[in-house]
Length: 326
Ligand code: G3H
Ligand code: 13P
Ligand code: ZN
Image 1 (cartoon, rainbow, N blue to C red):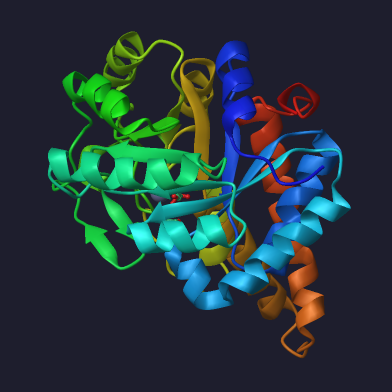
Image 2 (image 1 turned 180 degrees about the horizontal axis):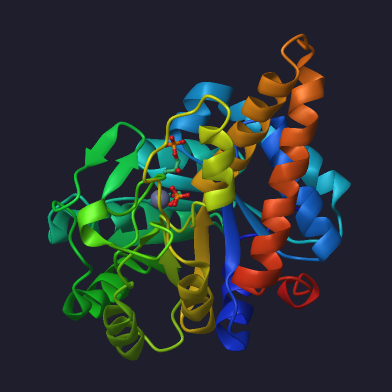
């Protein structure tokens, strides 16, 4: 089947208590690892491309890689989504250039300006059958070249969501409930430590999620910054020359709980980066004489595939749901 927008996926995800995985793609091995797992698990999927990915790999290459995945996986629905669209022009370029969904990220703007920008994108996108994600509230961490320090983030205000959604016409809304981008989601001071000395993060603000959902019944909510930063991959990185002390993510049980509520899209990038980097570091450490990129990219791709499979089955709950999302 051809690329689809996110409408049907979110409708079914909301109704049946699961979330669609939105995985960031930057090159062929990442596209292949993700989509091979989704094909084998019969899962719908969102492949998302950031401004940084477009700058790195080039819009046309990324679209063609995703088109190749669509051809190789005709039985699963795939969305091609712009992640953190920074302005109208980038959204327009992606809509005109084959994307089926875009995010316009006006979360850093004053409320009225966020509404005006988001509505402009929605008007353009909807005329072309493209779905739009907006955002209210700011996450800590790094998105492209914008860094929001811990402490400068702000939770979504539930009292703003009805007006934002009604006036903009967005199809989904990203909210801030304590997740953040990258591999250092919580400062050690925000956490406790268990008996093994491993950091235990504070809980997400499910109270905010519930208040938002009460105000917007049936409306799909999006969670950014939802990597769990698996400690076995952090260890693999650190034992093979890397330096990622106190890397920490969102516990998977909390994401599973969010997926069973109104969260229909869960964004995961850092976990795939960790799987790829840990695998390649270990490969080079164990086989310093090797220099054929295929030899180290092959296990990296295989581990991306396995971590995506784990997310589909055990975190998102969308394994086996491809058919109902068509
Ligand atoms: O939101 C951030 C995503 O992980 C994309 O990261 O801007 O480095 O491509 P990036
Ligand atoms: P992570 O850094 O937690 O993977 O978040 C990715 C994301 O939100 C992309 O928009
Ligand atoms: Zn994000």
